[in-house]
Image 1: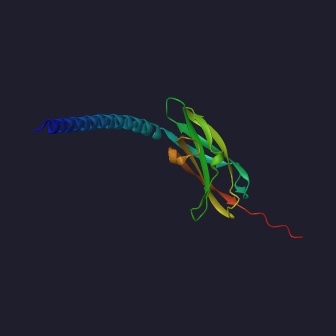
Image 2 (image 1 turned 90 degrees about the vertical axis):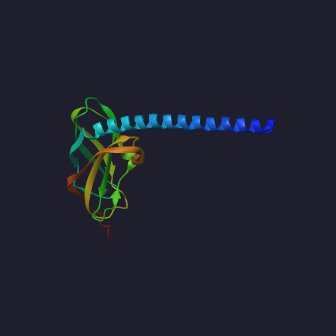
Image 3 (image 1 turned 30 degrees about the vertical axis):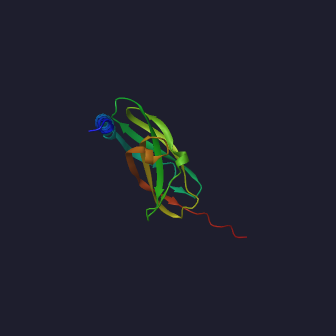
Length: 171
């Protein structure tokens, strides 16, 4: 074997060992991250089972497109500590089309025990007249971003919201 071949062989061996070292380090980091992810998931599961929206009501049973209604959440939290969540709300028509206004999603501190919270919801201007179901949800994560949040609780109000359109004024 020539000196050039020897140097090439040694360089190849060093590269192989370096790749093995990096792969081992990556695997160790991956295992560490998996352990952390599992700890977070366990904590979230504990929180998920510790929260309930017991009642969802609104200040009006009738609204018009563009009108703002107030929604009340009666919440029970079994958690032993307060934590930040946000309130989401929507109305859903008989065909399943959902109307919501994320700008009105509200961040709150959820205290242990029974509490009542409220938020506003402006009825979409393009919503058609008819009967709508009212939904409320409590989310953990960045306000108004369900994609980056975890829904902890959701409830459909037993009463419906009747959406009416004002008749045009004839002259």
